[in-house]
Amino acid sequence: MADITLYCFPQSTCSQKVRLALWEKGIQFEERHVNHKEREHLSDWYLKLNPNGVVPTLTDGDDVIIDSSVILEYLEEVYPDHPMSPDNPVTRAHMRKWLRYLEEVPTPAIRVPSFNKHLAKRYENMDDSAYQKMADAHPVRKHFYKRMNKTGFSAEETAEALDRLDSAAQRIADALEGHGKDWIMGDMLSIVDAAYMPTVDRMIDIGLGDIIDGRPALKAWYDRYSVRDAFAKTYYEGSRLTDIFGRG
Image (tube, rainbow, N blue to C red; front, side, top):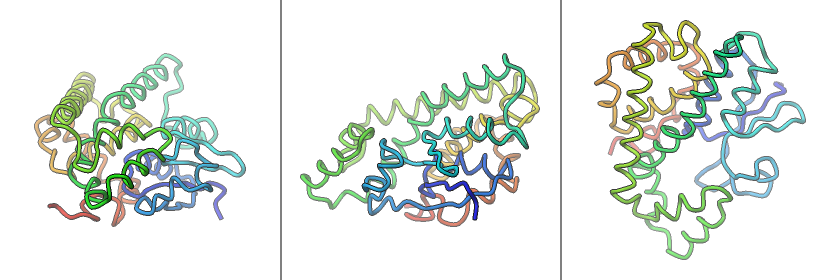
């Protein structure tokens, strides 16, 4: 049995970025699926592990690590074989700059069209009071669910999210074109690539692929990444929203 367990939703973009890094680094781990439909992430046993009530959570022996970007850096520090971070302090600072940008802009933005198109369907027949109770039960996503309500996000919030996704795609494309190398940080496939890939794959999955296709450097980056073994192991059957909800 592996000492590492990753508690995740198969379709969670934050879970996917950790799976990508684990597979790239060749770290043995057990993947435990948390049942989102049954709101298992809000159960007492899970909240003891992760009081934020979100995925992923990684346990390494008795140690519990939460927050996907924190997990990525933890894995780099504790499992240095097959590094995905530069060893130069300045370049490593630039890596962290990218990670913070991804956390601030595209990672939260992709949730809006994802919930609009597919995930909100789980709540459309829920009683209003039951929905409010469900939203209130989320330690850090309560206001997210209240803004979404049962009908999806407002047109204004959706437009803002799409603008953020577009601007992030342009920034990444500019970086790739600027240095002419294969990966966002240059020659090394890094945890920055792992952190951004799930957003790109989700855009393609939910019909926003034109944001990628219109930027040749970014499309080439996706094509390079998507043929890697770690990608295939991360995106197994059932790990995309369309696997669950179809293309409708």
